[in-house]
Length: 142
Image 1: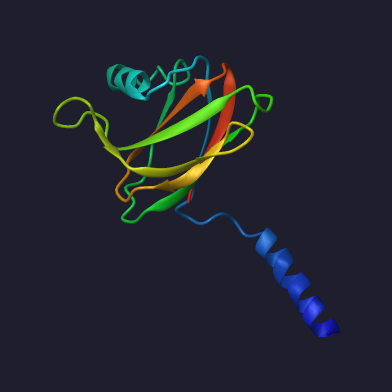
Image 2: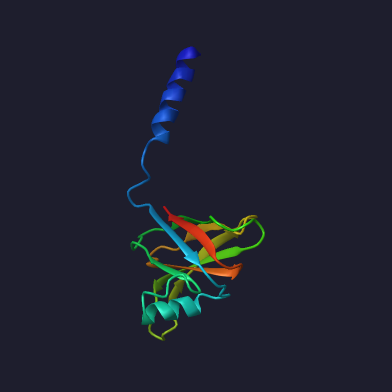
């Protein structure tokens, strides 16, 4: 019994010190003003890459061959005062100019954060505020 506890503690300590998976993406960003849909930040990003943070945040992703999990965590807002939403796209322009959105399975959390699963082949994440202002967030895709 003693040996199993020691082994467990050693393995737990080693796991805690391991770096994130090599294909994990972490983006720290902020959004000043709400935008109910990702259309405005996506369009602004096509015009200039200096629009990040105004009404949304566009982050390029590695082209994943399979579905991946994501978590958008509110870092700087009080619970209940903000709602962060993340939309995923295979292409920001698409053949009709409306982009090529891909489906996601999203779950809102009590603190305004969101997590879920994004589709295979997603190349961009668009983070928007449904509610709140001047919000810092961390997006983790793994």
